[in-house]
Image 1 (tube, rainbow, N blue to C red):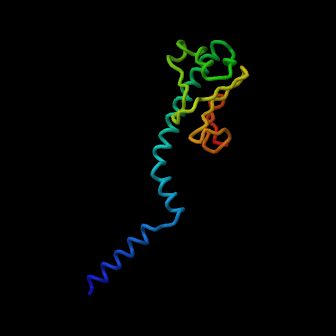
Image 2 (cartoon, rainbow, N blue to C red; image 1 turned 45 degrees about the vertical axis):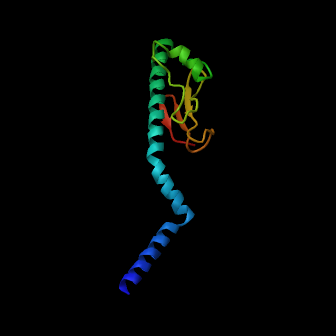
Image 3 (cartoon, helix red, strand yellow; image 1 turned 120 degrees about the horizontal axis):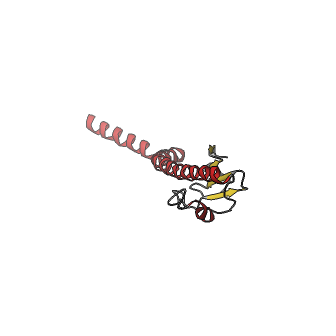
Length: 133
């Protein structure tokens, strides 16, 4: 009899634990993917900082940042003298965005959602990483 009660109690606990609520399941999913997302953010930030370092060197030599509107155009200014290869894609496969008026610049990754102006964006402006909007 004790074995039957123990078995019923064990099954009940398992069912309650497995059922969970939708929010807890999302939380668990987020916890599982967080290290991967943070790794991709770190890699993208590292690539953006490498470009920023090359841009600073370019600025020292020319007193102006390259005035172009795409990462592809930018790579023509920076390779091979300042960088052997300009990273063009972020860790999520989206193209990095470069904007400059010659006096300042912005490097932008749209992050995993690939939408500008959302909290997962990575923005590096004039060698400073800015918090997401």
